[in-house]
Image (cartoon, rainbow, N blue to C red; front, side, top):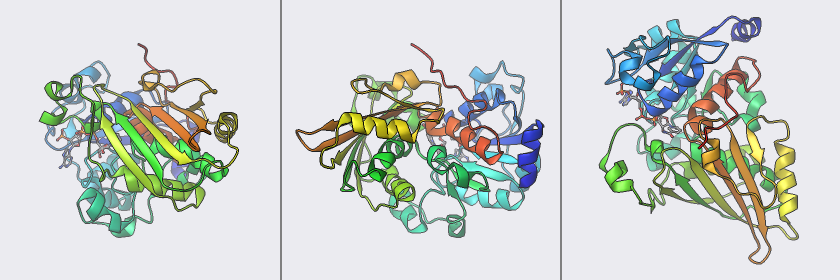
Length: 359
Ligand SMILES: NC(=O)c1ccc[n+]([C@@H]2O[C@H](COP(=O)([O-])OP(=O)(O)OC[C@H]3O[C@@H](n4cnc5c(N)ncnc54)[C@H](OP(=O)(O)O)[C@@H]3O)[C@@H](O)[C@H]2O)c1
């Protein structure tokens, strides 16, 4: 493991694998990794797309010099031989059965699915399956870089956080820790664009169903509910409960979480803002907005940035914390590469965009 840190610091490229290379987050991983100076793409894995080349599966990546790379079956020993670092962008339930064998074969891994984010007993009710490798759940590190960077550095297996949970936990943790809000039930309203559902076309996410539609979904059973509770507990030591209602909106990318917390006495918007600004002062990917400014997920598109704002509403005794990010970048592939940088002893921002695509 120490060897990997040394290679990265010496400037030699580390071999990387992307499992799920034909999917939305897999495509973002390939796009971002291609511009990373310390990581070199050496293996692409898939299921139904095995036998295709990258440019056949992801035509928008066809002009890259890796466009002719084949997508291969994901045999653990072969993946581990090809790559020191493995990014798994497979559906939930698939990486749990695969990554332990890959790590045992000598690679380090980052899972973008939810397969290593929760305790074993949470998988049947929230994910609908019994975890096939429960002993690995304690070994996996919850990879929220702004809060757990030191621990991530030595991890062999990192559970990359979910998109909603990233925005929510980054916004609420410093405020709860500073005692500016009471740890009562936190009500969270989430909005997501359609790419959050993955590439497989379904009637419910088709253009015909979603054009002009705004609708709640998977309430009260969305799997990011226990992840938000656990992420806050890891960050603050507090036991909080979360009520989470996600909504689908007719956009392609973007997540916004609006969180309502009971305010501590005397809290002002200025106090909340300086709390967030102080917590993330040196963090390259957190942008805390001044009082009066409002977050916009569109500004974060294509970047690894999360925008945060916090407002006190003394009339109702409420603290409102809002976060916005690109679900495929800071909510998935970008954050995974940020974790990889920490695991390799590199500055966390290497190879990652801080400027969004506009308009
Ligand atoms: N989309 C987001 O905004 C987002 C954000 C954060 C985290 N995530 C997580 O990232 C993971 C990938 O999401 P996505 O949106 O990229 O999904 P996606 O577009 O549907 O892609 C899924 C990928 O997994 C492969 N795959 C499908 N079924 C498989 C199976 N049974 N066994 C092995 N591989 C299989 C597919 O390969 P073939 O095409 O070759 O079959 C494809 O490459 C999910 O766990 C998701 O929860 C997604």
